[in-house]
Image (cartoon, rainbow, N blue to C red; front, side, top):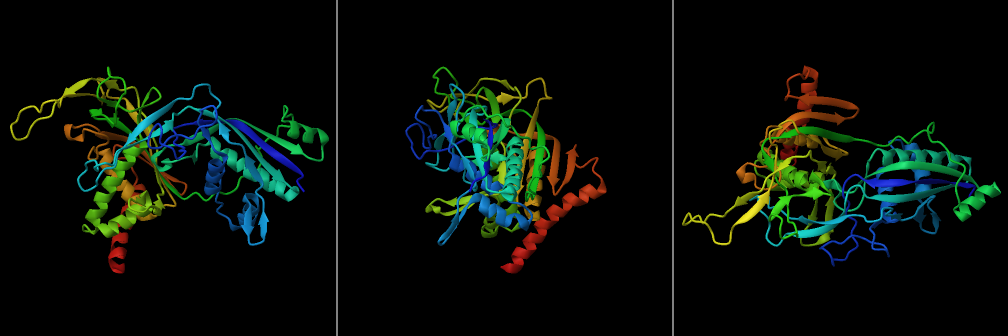
Length: 451
């Protein structure tokens, strides 16, 4: 018998755009899920599913309580979940949605794959949703565990560790909880029962300050870097306004952004190149590492053969860079003359006279990382740092090159800060970073040994 309940109420804000598809393609190839008021919403099934995926305690003593908490079915036996949640409905009047373009790049040539362009609809960052989550308890032991779970859930949400929807590994769907309120209902108290049934103003707010949190398994390798833009940058977006240029830099809301999809694509391409060099162009071995890290979906069978990646690359808000309209033409390589009707306009971002504008929080996270994967990302970081790896479009005319300013590299409660390259690092820190690259070399030898 249920002895009581906890209720968590609050506002969930999108820190990056979100793609929560409905399976329809009326507006784009992937349309947003909408309610009867045509407002986007977050289904409770997706929200609870993400929580269950993330909350994995590092201690086995919580295995049975978690099984009971989430609910299970085993033959004729079963247990209903202790947690329930309403759909997260949008609480702002006119939520902004946008349609973004996506492309697929061929790693061999660096060009767009034919007929691989698609588009998808997103909810813009800053959109708020109402959260109402309930946890029931049957006795004192389940009450204590429910408090631990509730405190853990609040910490995860308030620290922005939740990504929801599609393309989460490309930084979409990051959210944060604010205006949190937690209420306790004792079903032995008639007033509490009445308030819970009628959903009137809740009076018994409870604190989670001194509640122990679950020890979450957190084996992440994180690179959080800051860069300067050397010259110019454009990740193309194509305006519907005929008075606008043919291509402008992509925005989220009214802010210039560096989308995680572009970053992830460039990083994956460079990682593949590095692996092909290490494995002497044995693409089968290179792909084995790439698939486990970045994931993969077979183009022929689609969902039949799919692997979710363990790397997440966040979308980055850019400083207010200058924009400049540029008119470009296309030259006929045979005659050297201009190709007719090949005039087009673009509006890239430029670093401008103020060279100090920094691109902050370029964040790469590997969940359940392996040492050789961390070593691979350090080599990619080096190429980004030195401007050898360009991001976005029009790379052939010098766009998209960065210059490293700072990088915080974190793993297993250890953080090393890079500034001005390796200068200023202690010999111990240098050895720690070199160990990751060495692990990549050792992995190569192990792979050759297995073949």
